[in-house]
Each structure stands twice: as C-alpha cells, then as structure tokens.
Length: 196
Figure 1 (cartoon, rainbow, N blue to C red):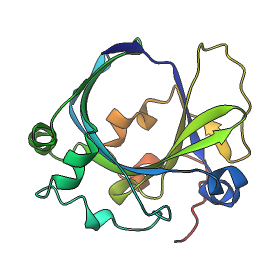
Figure 2 (cartoon, rainbow, N blue to C red):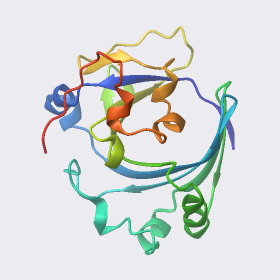
Figure 3 (cartoon, rainbow, N blue to C red):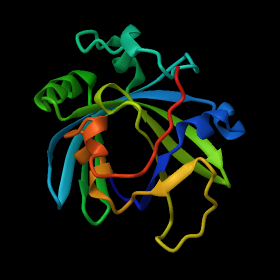
Figure 4 (cartoon, rainbow, N blue to C red):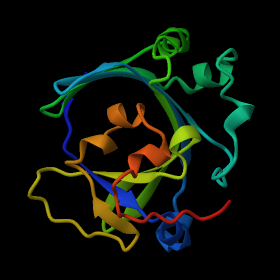
C-alpha cells in the first residue's frame, strides 16, 4: 500500500510525560521490533513486527515473555509483521508479511535493529506516538506526530523538549547505528528519565 506521511519528531522528557494525566490515560502499549535492510538519503527499507502488550505497566519490563525470536507464535497471532519502504519525499509503501518471513529478514538486518515500547498518547486533539527505546538506545524517548501539512498548527504538551524532525541522527534508520551515549556527543540537550 502506498501512502504519503508527514511526521514531526520530538525529544520527550520522560519524567514529565509519565507524570501527565494524558500518559496515565494512554489505553494501550505496543512492543515493536524493527530492523533495517538498507537505508541512504533517498530511502529506508525496514521490517517491523508489533505486538499489543497485556501488561500496561510495560516500562522497565523485559519483554522476554514473548519476543524470543525462535518462538514466533505470539507474533503470528498478532499478524502485524510488515515490510516498509520509505522515500525521502515521505512516500511510504508497506506490505503485510507472515511472521516467518519477518524473522528471516530481521536476522539479515544484523545489528541494524531497535526495540521499543510505543504508547499512543492523546493531547490537544491529536494522537502522539511516543516511543521508549530499549537496549542500546535506552533511555531515549521520542514522539512522532502526524500532521496534514507542514503548516498545520498544533498544541505542544509541556513534556516536549524540542523538535528534531530535521536532525538526521534522530531518524530510526540512523538510530540503529548508535547507542544512547554516542547520540549526545557534543550536545547540550538534557533528557530526564524516570527510574523504573
């Protein structure tokens, strides 16, 4: 399926977010495994699998109870494995795939992978996709907001630190090449993360 996406990306203050009413009211949390088969300035080719978690207190919890790559049953039931191709102009192609194919392609990604919890947080009449990165990128928290145009006016919550839409290193295809510490070399932005 082909679609045009316009997304803004923001760094998030995790402590302020977790203390907010809108976060406490977020109804669902997803676990996401994502890997990149290739990316450059013109495109990114990735595979992703998502699962809705039953445990709404997922922060800080290792998802060992389902994400064993050799035990695909939970993901097969979820049916949310996809192949994505995204162009620099924002056009995205995405295709459903069986979990077994996802598993094979994910293994080909090598170290170009990331894992995260995603919350859908409603604020100002919009849904913010808030990602808590795990493993090498923890405690990074980033939110994406889909807009209808670059000129669209929207309300920013107080848990937004700054917009990073135009900063390449915060694109997922670049994040897979880094760990949390390497992202902040020569940076002065402070991020707070609630201890869990």
